Image 1 (cartoon, chains in turn orange, green):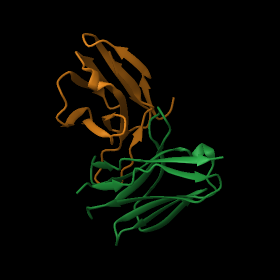
Image 2 (image 1 turned 90 degrees about the vertical axis):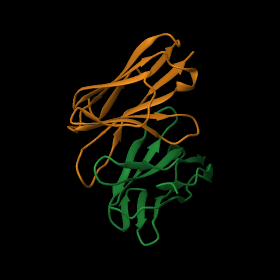
Image 3 (image 1 turned 180 degrees about the vertical axis):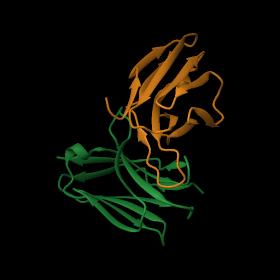
Image 4 (image 1 turned 30 degrees about the vertical axis):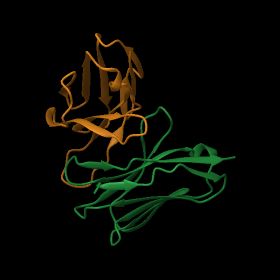
Length: 114
Length: 110
């Protein structure tokens, strides 16, 4: 496996369900991100982890709960979501350094809340 | 003012045409620029990155940066139907700060 891998690729969940999205990066990076991408909207940064520590929470509702057990793995735990949370959730990784970064994305997890 | 501004299009061109995709940015702090291609229902794929003014070429793709006018462009030569996608421009500042345009939807008509 290379790059950034996300599972599942598609997820349908009810508003009372609990599910998790998983992300694994094979690039040796030490920063990982969750982004939300809704139709006709720009990428929305949700969370940033540097060396397993959360460094940014972009005012995300508590029904989204991230977990980063190590620099290669990132989870997004979902519970009591709303239909407006239906979107493409993208995991990404980069090197955490002062200058000269590129960010690499996974294929995304398509979430539909019914 | 947004960090990165991008014309959303949509842009429709005939096969073989030269495509020009453009973005402007507002902040002159350390700059590292990227272009991504995103096919429908897929994640963004990194196409090119550069940090200097001027042109960088990779096959049919050329990324151009003009720091004096804060303008970045992506040119696609001999466009193909497989180039039909949404193209995102992005810039990186220090650390983990990335700013993305809204994306330009491109359709190349056979």
